Image (cartoon, rainbow, N blue to C red; front, side, top):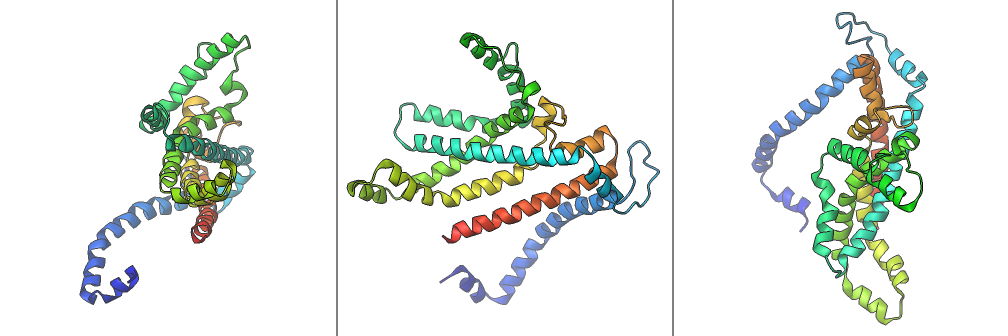
Length: 296
């Protein structure tokens, strides 16, 4: 008997009481989510600046038009897409490799698993500081030391490749998530299928391509969807490492720049609404992709 059939068999008063018990949580969720959204919509159509809080006026869609005409908007949108795409590709690829390694009986697997999970325990601003000052510092950083050992000049990461530097930091933070999801799926894989394919003479490459990858289609889609939703709001890493700039500013940092650096709450609210619309469009297509993969 399905869960829907069981729910229909419950007495009406039980269903009604359940809705009453859930109602306060739903009301609080709506209040905490809708109230800021309504306030942001209101500010996005007004000329509201922090330096002149008493001077406000309705300007309609002028903030949106000015934002789209802003030369910083389109580079920020492109940087957001590039950042999300790089992090997704790298975390899925490297996470899959680590998951395959951790699934096998290797020496020091428990230590390796702890090292893979360790980025979870580091806050984004702290990890950005660690990468900036200890790893990517062009004079005394770890990568500069490796370059000196190899006899090549050190690479100034944040000066020559700021967006790539931020993407590497964010990918390092999200690698444990992808690895654990894929590792959990691999551990649920039916080993009898693999043994039967091996007995039939299938190579390791064929087994991975025709058995393992189809089995991982659903968790990979879920990893892509969950990471994309959170990656669209990447902010701390940009602020700590590059402090903005045309080459590394994304939509989240553009909103911060408009509000806290230029004191233009109207323009920042318009940028926030556009970021929300963009995130919902991306999430819509990702949810559809995940739904199709779950139906396979």
